[in-house]
Length: 290
Image (cartoon, rainbow, N blue to C red):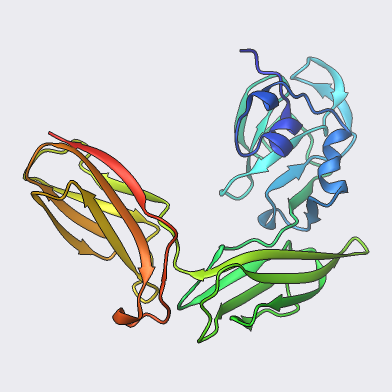
């Protein structure tokens, strides 16, 4: 298949997943500007608080990509976790991971953008604080929280820290904020659960499993012990011996065959945790024992 997408399609539509539809999109200037003109993204003052960069312009000159005269600022890129390094597609050429100054585009008119949403975890733990953020360029910030949550710090700032109230156990509680940007007032919200983090994945080693050999399984994320515990299930269970510690389970299989390993997180007042809420479901992995 011939890929027919450019830097703007990659940065503003494609991120983070490739789809067939985006493979066929060549997003021309000025249509990529719709992503910040409708305030899906807003401009922020520094690259460290951004997820995308637009090279601005226009600024015309010789382009080595086309071997001709063109707009050297007509470019968009996605930020990486390494400061000043980005991933972008260079016209009809491949995608590159590069320093912001090491690409065939001019950096004299850079504009940095971030999603205009409340960023932070979907779960407020039974114990401990969590932090939520807005893009750093917003002003006149006023946060509102459900009665089962209390503000620890950050009211009237883009960064808010909260924790569960002593009796809070509800699901789908609302975190809301009113703020200003570009002379306009915006209302944003995020639905939260007071619970324990759900298991996202299970890792194990060694990958080739034989009978009567210990296999170490890990549940991710590694939850602090004061927030909850891990509950494991193994099927079939005959001839299976396990030893649970934290987010790990050391399992020995006596018999060969196919096994289903499941784990979920939970919080139980019987163990001294502050609230009793099970996670939504088990996470499973399927293994063969030789």
